[in-house]
Every structure is written in C-alpha cells, then in structure tokens.
Image (cartoon, rainbow, N blue to C red; front, side, top):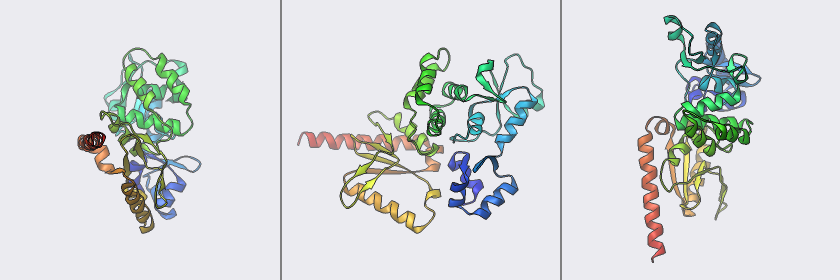
Length: 294
C-alpha cells in the first residue's frame, strides 16, 4: 500500500518509523518529494493540507482550528478536511476567493485561546468537542490524551463549559481514553457507545488457555465481546496474518465473541456497524438469560 493511501488510515499524521515499517525508506522519500506528505517536526509527517492551513490563516488574519489545528499538534484524526479550517472573527468580511480556499469558522477568540497562528491545545479540544460529530471529536481527544494532554485538564474544560455544544463536550471528555491506539479504534468505540448495554474498553488484557495473552482493540468484559479494528495496513506479511488468526481462534475457544470490522465500514457505513453490534449484544444477552434460567 502506498503512503498516500496509508495516511487517511493512520489519521493524517504518522512517525517515520511507522511509515518505513509499513512501506519502505524509498516510498517515504517518494511521498515527500511528490508532496503527498510534509515533515512537521523531527521524525513526524502529516498530510500536506497542514502547511496550507497555516498559510491561509495568515492571509485572512485568522487562526487554524478544529481538525486542522489538531493535525498541527500531531494528533491523529478521523478524517482530514478538504479545506483548512480557519477561525475568523464574526465581523470579518472575506473575499469570494478566500472563502474558496478555507472553511471559515466564525468565532471570536481571546488572546489566551491562541498560540501563534493556531488555537492552543485546550481551545482546539474545546472547539472539537463542541462542534464536531461525536466520533470525530472522540478520535481527536483520544489522540490528544495519547500524546500527553492531561486528562484532568480535558475534564476541567468540559466541567466549566457553558452554552452551545457544552453537553456534547462533556460527553466526549467523559469517554476520552488515552489507551485508544488510533482513530480507527476510537471511531469504532464511539459507535459502540451508541449501542445500549454494550460497554467496551480499549486494550484490555485477556488471558486464557493455550497461551492466550492478548490486548484486543475493544473489550466488553460482561458480555465477553471483543471488537477488532481490522486494518490491512497492519497485515503486512504472512507472519502478522498468522498471529492474528491464532489470537482470534484462541479468543473464540475461550468463549469470546470476536467481531472484526474493516476501516471502510467503520468510517463510511456506520449504520451497518451499529446493526452488527446491536445484533451481537441481543444474541449474547439472550444466551446469558437462557443460561441463568437453566
């Protein structure tokens, strides 16, 4: 798989080690020279829209925000916006040409909300929690926690928030978890949280017979359901495929229901994913009720 195809799956940001491990050094060099990725800091690369967003923000005297700002902080995201998202004062008038180059977000920012040409980390998370769909916001907040943003600070932002979107922000802050491995897994967890009676946690350790010792992507301990965000990107060779096949077999043998979801379905056919999850919960609850009355 080429790097230009990998970047959306990886969340728009990736380390050199990840990209070289999944492709090759020559593929990384080609992607850089062709402009398919840009270097954002030592050993870290992102989609090219990141630099474009900063340039456009400078031209309209605005600040990159939302997903564009998250990418700037090295946080992986669900999807990269087609145009840079730029916060613009509500009374600012933009030319037709400027509107075609950015996605304007009309909001008045205070000096303590910004850092350079971007919303600062805290304001970026607050705006994402208030304005973005739950799955997109959760992916970004998970990424922020994974990269060191304090969970207590995120909760504090949510606790003191008032006004439009504050309830959405609190829901995201409550669900955010640094253990989430990537945006693919975060979005799958967001869908699972919409399913009644399903309560999944990321990266829970499971031990069992025949040497079973794994940390699946998402686990519901009560229902013994495992959800795997199954990306082709991580099955680069036969050895990896064999390891995954073995762990799935051992989980099933140990009494777990294992559901594997493709990236395309989690990102683009979410109604189907929710139906599958709801069906698995219903079947498991029915089986548990039968066993209880046996």
